[in-house]
Image 1 (cartoon, rainbow, N blue to C red):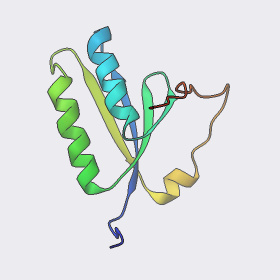
Image 2: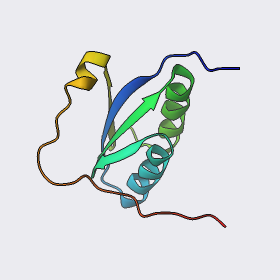
Image 3: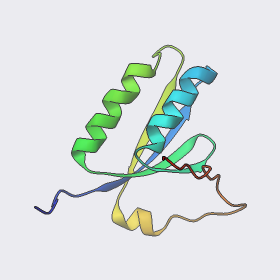
Image 4: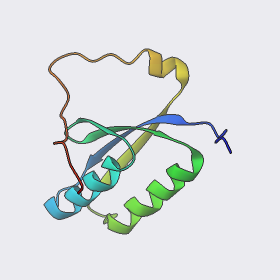
Length: 97
């Protein structure tokens, strides 16, 4: 059965002082989207995945210290995204045997 739910592009930025929590958030976001800058991801999510991501992030964040901002982009805004400067960060290739 085809998945006919719509997806939205979300730009997700985080500011987390703890290396441990920041690494966990990075790992969670890596499972949902593409790492584009050091504290920024782009994720195409349907509503179910968006809610699941929010729940997973909430488990690892400390409200008083951590900040995660999630910006939805409309199709028109997405087409107008520009990149100026160097190449974006890349995850090392992972192989599971």
